[in-house]
Length: 110
Image 1 (spheres, helix red, strand yellow):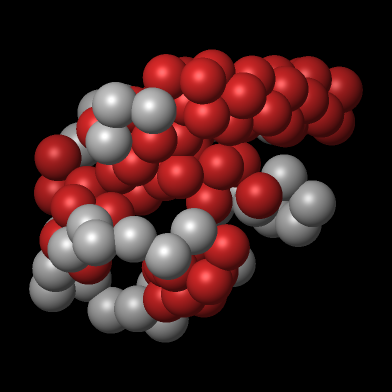
Image 2: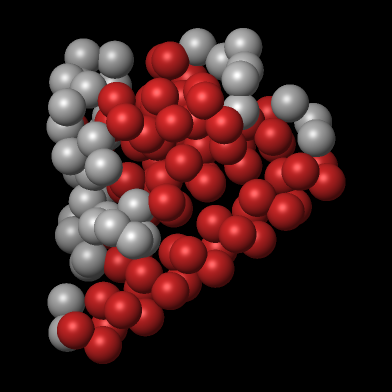
């Protein structure tokens, strides 16, 4: 999944008033967590997703685990919007996919 694909999907499933910059910030948070927490890379702020990062940049998690990106972004939008019930539901879905991806990585020896 690319940055552009993810952001377009988010806007389709959850029409919103958040700027692309804010959504990229949320996306950068989860991409960083995937790289550091699951893949064991060193934290590197230079890898953050910023406004200048091309939209066709491929995100790290492969299909079918790539849904963790749009789930995280929508969860953060729910949280920022103060909708705690939606946040809790979306966060639970995100956590399930994130943990599943981590287990898959462990099984394959990544």
